[in-house]
Length: 158
Image (cartoon, rainbow, N blue to C red; front, side):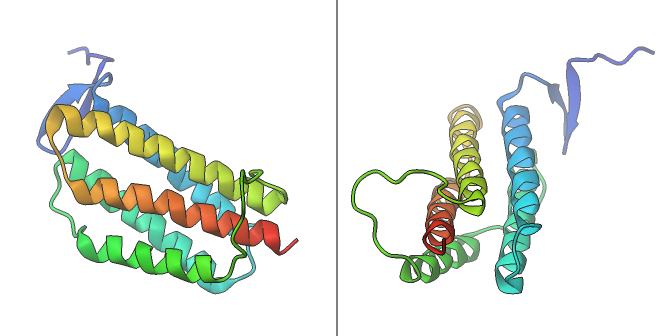
């Protein structure tokens, strides 16, 4: 029996590779790869662990979108809000347009921020077609803000 190349498996069944959820998974997978790549340029163990936790949370979000019963909710959104406040406190407020990536580490982090924004937009398509969880929107939106402040901090350490 020949398998249809346009089909792929999700929890609870099959779907097409043109399904909005599959696009979302691909974007979040790319985001996770870039976040993990970022950890190899850092020396701060706390930030490295934070980024690994972010990747773990992104995996939970993908599982939830795929239909699995996973532990994702308001606590993860609150964690990212606390991280934003921590990073924001370590930066000098910028006035006007911020040049993304004055340093190599800042540039890499801004790439991660931009991919996070794309993941949020991909989730908007999933949400429009399948409904969904507003907390996923909140998490992705706040995650891009976290990466903004992290990149700003890296650039200001130059």
